[in-house]
Image: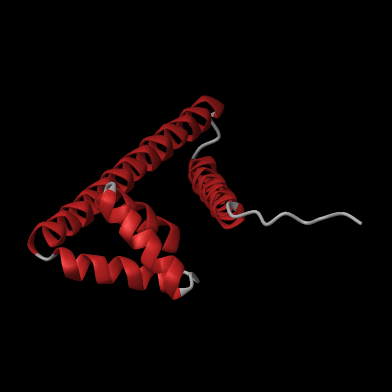
Length: 138
């Protein structure tokens, strides 16, 4: 009998596939729209070709710009979250400890295990542990 392994990265790969399919579909339709529109206005093959090529480059630059904005926004958001957690750790370490404990319990750990893991995290680097746990809860 074959064992089935749990693939924790499956949903992430599905999101990448979905984005790729939707992006390709969007690109094909927009370029085809430009080419058909220009072809209906002229029968010059070079003008139709150049308009299609221009649409390809415009779409590529548009997607690259959108991806850059998306990634930089994600980075800024994560940096703000880390700064907020760092401030909480400096001002109220007890609340941060309770928050980490609650996150472990919410993630399925028993209370004893959650307490041990929280204590170990605060002996090492609690900010790193909180950041990793927040990512795994997403």
